[in-house]
Amino acid sequence: MLETILDITIDRVDCINAQKILNYSTEEKSLRLDVFLKDGQRICYDLEMETSANKSRLIILPIRSRLYSSAIDTEVYPRGTHYSDVKQTYIIFICTHDPFGLGLAKYDSAVTCTQNQAVEVQNGISYVYLNCDAKTWNVSEDLRSLLSYIRDGTNCETDLTKQIDSAVRHYNEDKEWRNGL
Image (tube, rainbow, N blue to C red; front, side, top):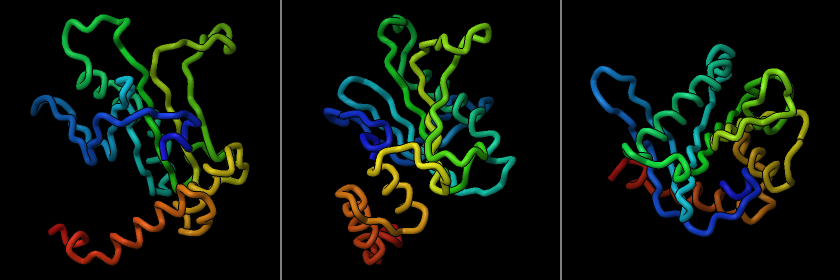
């Protein structure tokens, strides 16, 4: 799924956690990451699902992204880590509704220089917001199929969506798994 979303190849996944809780003390805000992964290159990925159509909830996605990336950095990089050892982090929100109202299927967010928007500040964090309800499909056919499948369970035309649909059907039929046994 990540390879399709980001149009990259991941050699291996070294760490995967579903519902990873980042909580450092009772005084700080704790966060729950839907799916957190680290690959063989120590690149971090946070994959979040946002199903709310509430505009105020969608508007705060960039703030949530900032908090998640900050918490991941604190979790992954111990005291004394050299800046050259800090790897890329991807924060990805799969939204069932358009988070920014432009109708695009994919929004890539970058930090740019205020004086010259063409200058991108390379800080090692990429924010990606996907819109399952897109009007303009500015993505590959594989990603379009994935987003359509997430939106309404249709469009099982790619190997990925066929695999996901098979897994969904399997787990929906597994009563023990559904009951948490």
